[in-house]
Length: 400
Image (cartoon, rainbow, N blue to C red; front, top):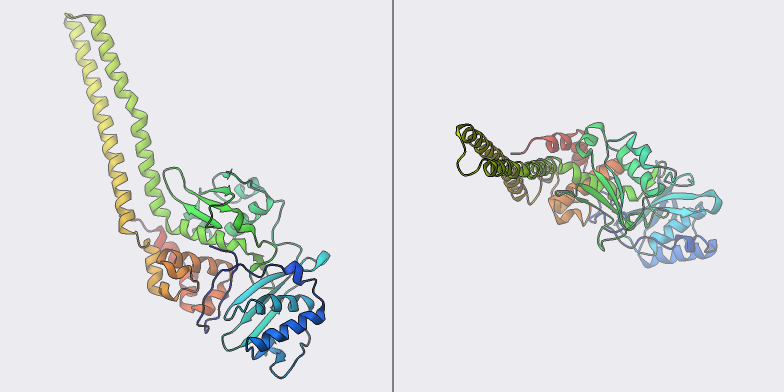
C-alpha cells in the first residue's frame, strides 16, 4: 500500500488510488503568487479543465475557460491546486496539508471531476495532526491492547498518537474484536505501510516507516477536522484483524492445546523414570508388596500416556480444524464475502480493493471509519451496511 489517498466521487469512473503524492509542498509554498497563478491557468487549459470553483451551496466560481485570472484564492489554496493539477489527478479528491510557516499547516481538499470541474475547500490552519507526547501507557489505560514492540524501528509519540487515534475511531463492539493485538514498529518490508499478521505467535500489526512518510503533507477526513493520513493504513489493518477475529481465536486455541501437550510430555517421562527407579531398587524378584508398588507405578505410566495422548489428539484436532477453516475461507472470511455481496470488489473505490474480497472490505472499512461521507459518495448502501454494524455481528459469529 502506498501513500496518497485520492477520494473519488461516486459519479467518477475512477477509483481511490495511491501514488507518490503531492510531495514538494514546502517547495511549492515558496513559489511567488504570480507564478502559481500562471502555472495553474496553464494546467487548466492544457488539461481541459472547464471550471474551478470553491465548494459551497452554491459553489463559487473562481476560474473558467474564458479567464486567465484566479479570484479570491488564498495562497494555501493556490499551492494545493497546483499540486493536484500539476500531476493531472483527474477524477480524484486529494487532501493536502500546505505548510504556512509558524501558522502551521492548512488543510485543503481538491476534487477534479471527470467532467473537467475542479472544486476545492480549505479549513483553518492546524499546528499538527498528531500528539507527539502520546505514550504506550496512555493508550493501554484506555484500550485493551498488547505490547508495543520495537523491532528495527522505535515507537515514538507520533506513532503512539496514530495508534491512539485509530483505536479511538472504533466502536466498543469493534474494539472487542481487536482486543489484545500487539503493535510492532518495523523499518520496512518493501511493500506495506502496515500489515496485520496472524500466526502461532504473530498476532500483531506491523507499522512501517512508510506509514509516516506523508504525516505533514496529507490528511484524511474533512478540512474542518483533518486527521493524519497514516490513520488510513492503520484502520485498513484493523479491518483485517476485525474480520479475522474468530480465525485468530482458533489459532490461539490450537496453540494453547499444543502448549499443554508439550507441558505434560515430561509427566510421561517422570512416570516411566519413577517406575524404572523403583524396579531397580526392588531388584529382579520383588516381594508381594514390591509387585503391588510396581503395578501402581505402571498404572501411573499408563494414565500419563493416556492423558498425553488425549492432549495430543485435542491439539491435533484443533490444528486441523483451524487449517480447514482457513482453506474453506481462502477467498475471504465470512464478513468479507458478505460485504462483497453488498458491494462487488470490482466496484471497490480503490485499485487495491479490487484485488480481492479481503482487501475490498479492509479498504472500505478504513474509508468509512476515517471519512464516512467519502464512502457514502461512492456507495450509500455500503456506508449504511457499516453504519448498521452488520460487519461486527458477522465477524463475531462463531465459525465451524
